[in-house]
Image (cartoon, rainbow, N blue to C red; front, side, top):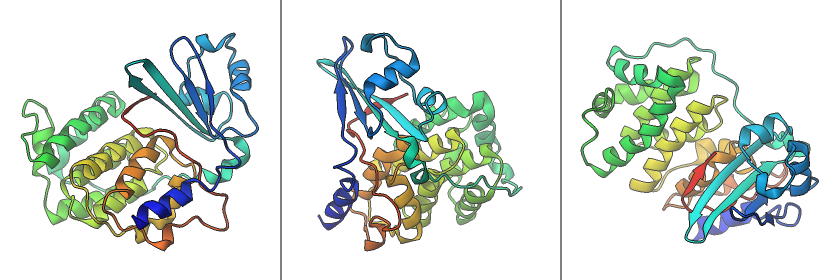
Length: 289
């Protein structure tokens, strides 16, 4: 219970400054999390929507058109309809959003990874990241992966110590986003290694959306199907940035990983030199936008 208490305290630090606000629409309620100087009405006006019922939110609009340094939009399904949660970091808190520098290395992936790399390269990697959740679920539960897939059977064989070391090196240091995506996928095969979990957490601060998506699905699979105690101290700084507002789409997955029987040390407490971490919204199974 101690780790839960620590994390709860971290997430409630800004409770008195950033309050959730709910707008009712004909499609269901929309909850805004993280608003201080902005209001739902101002966002509606700036985006050019005449009424709340005409609102269509996506994170890209909130960031590119309104200048929020980070944003996430999740839609939750319920019997009564949908419930949308929009979480933002306002511009005055841009220092909280700390994505990592893009790697500059030019590294080689093994020839045995070729089918996985080819799949990650197609369609900007969207199909690959979508199917990665399916692979993680099957591989980590010990059931058969989709043998009709062009790449899943190959990925299932990449389980050597050399594969793990290569994946960690590529994910942290290679400039090719496709190789970083494939590396995140390979780390699904190593649930017993702390450095696999740690590498995936670091990758959640990548500047490429598809790399983040691959890391999210990989980490979610580990946390869902192979929850265990992990030494988080080597990535304490990354976790502080993530809980402070970086990569908001990943917040619920980070929390899921931390709130398993994992060791949360005092090093994860809020950095006294920075503002308190942003509170996240609901964490039931959502649809991301």
